[in-house]
Length: 144
Image (tube, rainbow, N blue to C red):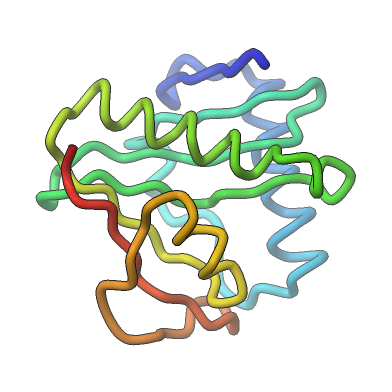
């Protein structure tokens, strides 16, 4: 599997469009999320993705707040059930551990995916919260 990881300013117009289109298809059309996707953080993130067109994507932030953060984790409906989500998260975790060794990694996990993230080594580190109308848990992998 070939992964691409780029900062915002190095994304081609087509790559950017495909990443944002996938986020729109899953978060807004499928899951009916009720908050804005454009949060002025994409410009500060590393963007990890695969597929042509893009069907697996997440964004990654370095440890500016004492931990790395992985977010906007999304897999197209036609790519689910094939281990693509696990592969995406493992690639993101590996990137964080290689680039920022010893830094913990934090996510806001949709509650229904709690076990999925626990199998990847994340543990709940706070109370359930609502984001975009969907219950989430803050989860963390301690620094490696």
